[in-house]
Length: 358
Image (tube, rainbow, N blue to C red):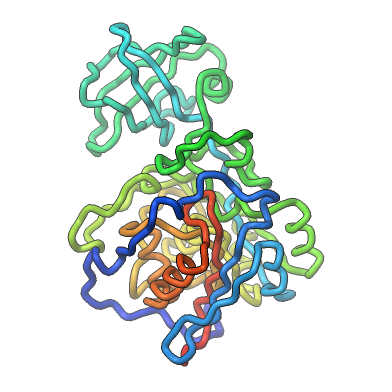
């Protein structure tokens, strides 16, 4: 595997508490609609630490090429969000909301899912989509305990069925419907599989990608299917006791070869990071990963990370802490002070694991 030619600044492990990853996020700073055009969102550029404070530059995403170099490798997650939110009804008339997570069978007929109110449903109960009369069957709680099994009753195929009755799921903190559902898809998305978008990628346009290619920056695709952990806050007092759920990832062998020879690897989003570092640490190019990246992690692939601002007390914030150390706190504080928009539809950052500190 590729070894960085830079000094490794990964923070040393010390005792951590969940409060270490908390901060105050005002409700009005959670973006409800995306910026148009996509690449006009703000870009906070991490430049390390000077005189004890994070040094940053305030730019926009279309300025990203200024921070890339010929020989860099930009890695994107090309997963596509499925219309996996189903609004169904019981025979009694009560409403049921289903969020599909992972297929459990090769024909994608049975799925793991979040179900409200899953605890009140009976095994074998038929749930109906009123507008189309399509049906699903509730199959009870899975052994993991935090999700349920749903059977889709289709005569054609799963994606056609879901296109007919499903909706693109938005995170629960977004309460405004998007005028166009493809605005929650990246422009390079391919295989429909994920329960949520790899949101750092939402900022790219075809024109920006071409400009990056013209600089002789290589662009590679990986896949990580975004699943349950996107919706799971850390609930243990010691965040390192948090149990990660597995997610499917795939990295082509030729992509790992390009990683090894790249000047720098720039991962677009935490999901691209997890795919690359899973392939490296597991020495397996595809499979299911429960990789939990936190302080003391042995980075093998990623040098720079483009990522949105994350919720407090989440595994994503622990990954950022592992990547740049505790200067994330100063970066987040300056972002809030300067009016950045947070979370899935908000602004983004370019973080540098090797940035100098003084």
